[in-house]
Image (spheres, rainbow, N blue to C red):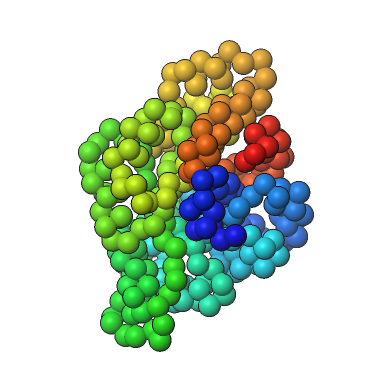
Length: 289
């Protein structure tokens, strides 16, 4: 079943974010994924997250889709490519059988391993969404016919925890440009998440980001150092008081994920390629999911 079909069902979708390797060894990742595949509906492939060079996500995503049989969501960012290369990547990925795309502006090089690298940013995520939607109509950005309409499933990121109204305006603008699904920042407060998403059109598929806390220290770092991430007081208190903080973090993530799945939404696990943590989370997740 495709990701779109799964999100269209009432049972939600379980997605795992898997970063490409820093080198060329893919086999280790494939072996780690094998016992998890039965519980996964799709695999999300980020592009050089936090400005750190990794294997090309298109090459990695194609291999993962071929080897696992699972739909891939390919992240494409505007940081490293001009509008010519961005269109080429969409066309190449589509020709290789990848139809799901998460289109993002991308972290600036200054946050990563190559702070002196030049960023491109010919367009922002909104411009890239427009390009992809134009391809669905059968044209590239210059108006040249592509020979067929591309059946792209287009996604974008959003931050439901921003207190600024301009975040809602930005999210609705992305929807108006042709977005099919939205992926949130990590959720630690369902109340705030629901307040925001209740104001969005009902025909947009929502995927909630799930970051499993392994310690109070990590929770404190996310709360105070990572822009866009909201960790409420009750979660901080639970993590601080827990004798087994990793297990408490899994429990918190499970409670949120099961609510999202019960509502027919998607869940995107962000575990930083910690496959043992992913396995332990999936083991405690309600079996019907």
